[in-house]
Every structure is written in C-alpha cells, then in structure tokens.
Image (tube, rainbow, N blue to C red; front, side, top):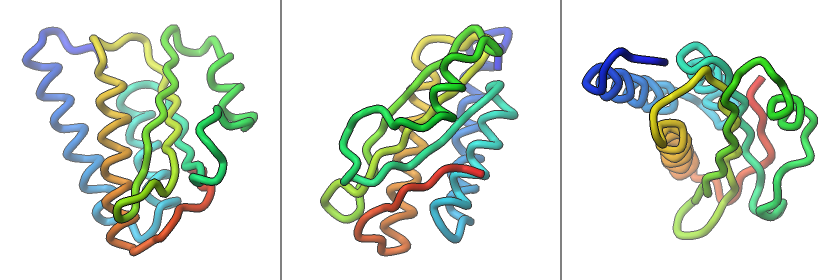
Length: 139
C-alpha cells in the first residue's frame, strides 16, 4: 500500500475502511469477521494477524506462538502490533490484537486501521448482544 501521492493514499485508506465496515456488517460472528478482515488487510498491506482476547485475559501481550512468529519474521521490513479495546454496552468486552506487516506505510495509517477494526468489532459485538467476548483468532 504505497500510493504515489497523498490524495491517492487518502482515497485508498477510505476505500479500505469502507470494505472493512462492509465485511464486518455482513459477518454472522466475531471469528468470521476476523478471518475476512485479516484476509483483506493481508491483501492490502502485506500481512496481518488478528486476535480477540477476552477482558479476563488482562492487557498483557498474548502468549500466542502466531504473534511471536509474526513479529519475529523478517518477511516484512515493518511489523506493527496494535491493541484496541472492544466494548459491549458500556463495559470492556475484550481486546483486539492486530499484527500488521508491510513494506512501508505513511504515518500512523496502520494504527488508524487497527482502531477502526476495533470499532467495527465493537459494533458487531453490540449487534450480536454479546456480554463478553471469547478468545478468537482468524483462521
């Protein structure tokens, strides 16, 4: 996702966010949404790993081999780890752990994308009336 100019980058970001919103809107559950959004991010950015951790797991980095392998991989020169709270109603329901790998992106684009995915998953959890989230990893 290396556009040639700022206008093109903004257009690509808006299109990606629109696609993420559509995928989550059509999803029947959190794991399906994670799998589809992860695939979309991987195709757009280079690589992605999405995990939802329940609120009971705390805010520490998950001891998931896939996260360690992703972050230690040399496949992408830039690898970012983003954690975003997910809510259901007015209380915390879990945390989105998003690992995104790319060959380079401008500014805080990946953080904005991860935050947006978290907001969309929060909306999905509310729509499904989930009181709390269970551990979920994209397939």
